[in-house]
Length: 133
Image (cartoon, rainbow, N blue to C red; front, side, top):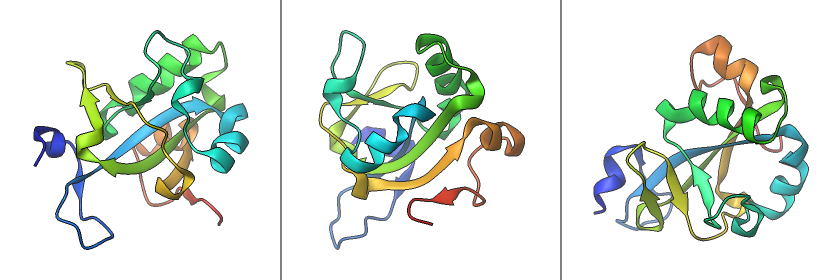
């Protein structure tokens, strides 16, 4: 088992013994239609490393602020996507910022929340909208 599993292990849906991580990706809301259709694409990363960037639940506030600053959009226009990936695909930096060097398909997505909901509830909660709901 990967040592990164302590962040947020969840039981895999399939009968595999591999650890799955529940992570969160913040993005401007204007990107949501494309992401829901195609998934999170590493080639769309705007930094030096072409990867899908993600944080554990404790990193959501920082990720929202970072996205608002980097993409020059109001923080109220930032959405947070929950997704699960195999732990061995994730690399973590010291600040608990993780990256995946593969695309994340839409089938991996869980809840989608606005920053306003995250701020109001103090984190991720069950009142978020589910994709397709």
